[in-house]
Image (tube, rainbow, N blue to C red):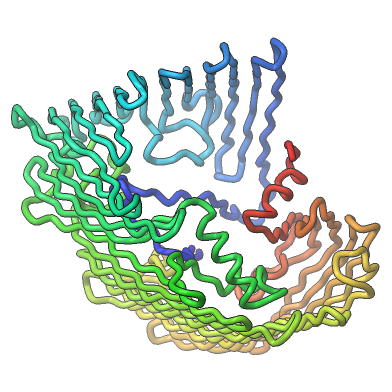
Length: 627
């Protein structure tokens, strides 16, 4: 159980109003019993490196079944601009006979023609459970291309057929347009065709003509984009190909940062939906460069460490000290409703109107965020206010952080986070936390101290489950309220300067918490603490060995648990440390396990401090590659 919180707002659609997906890869524990999870791939290169052939195998026994997958792949360069790729694999949770997946692609890039032809299939039963729901159980083949007729005129086209293997849904579609590029913009005209069979088995077609373009204004600082569509024969029944009218305005604040506002009217089969969007579009790493620079100016030597816990991403600089951010994301259906049986894929959001999610198709929502950061030479404060109003419920969120450098290697930090959700029935869930932390790491001292005090409150009315978006513990049958006071203290001593093979390092830490809670009519409270140590000794400048141990004591119950074992570490590159160890015994406590691994068994941990300037060096050191 947990909650992922983003440092910046994630809009439901991108700047072109295409749906945005958040993809999270995760693993869960399968219990205390030992299970095998292993994979291997072997590859060789032929024809002077132009052809690569590989085979792979996966075995996973952790999901309660013996999942086995075998596969083969090939990649070949045919000429200077053409590459062939092929993959095929068989197997699933029930063994090698369960599912099939394959991919075949021809990719060509030339001076006048870019072309991609593909065919792919993924059975629903294929794999070990890692498949994307949108792609599972589908077969798709198509052709994407772009032909440059002159320096200014080009033709782009997409044609594809998609079939759902486990339902009636399928689609044959095409999109072709001719584009004329001017010095100050573009003009395009094209057509779209879609022949759908929805999940309800009914056929729906769309035949649309599109006219649009872009125009640069005011010395290229403003970009105006618009397009309109109409259906000459009146066919606009495909749920993903309604008649759409769009307008967008983008203002370039500085290179890589744009302020964007967009509005869309979609007129589909039985519904009219309006989508509104306002936000900041930041080119990759541009905002990160800005934030990294300002952050290190504000909080000095411990900048990267404290930013990971207390930073927020704000994109638009205003003067020397201020950085702000704001977003608006809204969709409302003015008339009718999106036919739920018209969708081709149950897990794919419709292009216009409704929710971008798999829980429901129809529903109005509006989400607003406002954030700001203020920085001085030795301190900074940031905050964000979030609100979302929707048919499914309302949400409020507040996040604020304060950082203050007290000198070289000494930092004071504090944060407040509060979130609440209200569902359709009026039930409320709340999560709130406040903390203050001190990092005392003087550059001229061999001693360091880390102290953090946290107050946390969680509550959920009857009707909520543990799957609520806040990650608040709940059991559905009644109200749950939990309050905690948590303190962590660590004292460290090293015999030489950090990172220079200083010899020996010793750490003592003590964590304590008081918990009071109520489940329906049952109340409880208790005091739990953890006392531990870690000893490490350097072997040269890159390697080290260590041993650690800790004991957990629940005072009210008189219960004890302990964790401990040896470990080895290596620093393959600057700001990178990898350790592997084995705990002979262990325990779990979510309030104390963030900084050290206490569960029983083998483990591997990695600490990596990076930004856009250092990630390349760390990647080369870990995985090889050109400098």
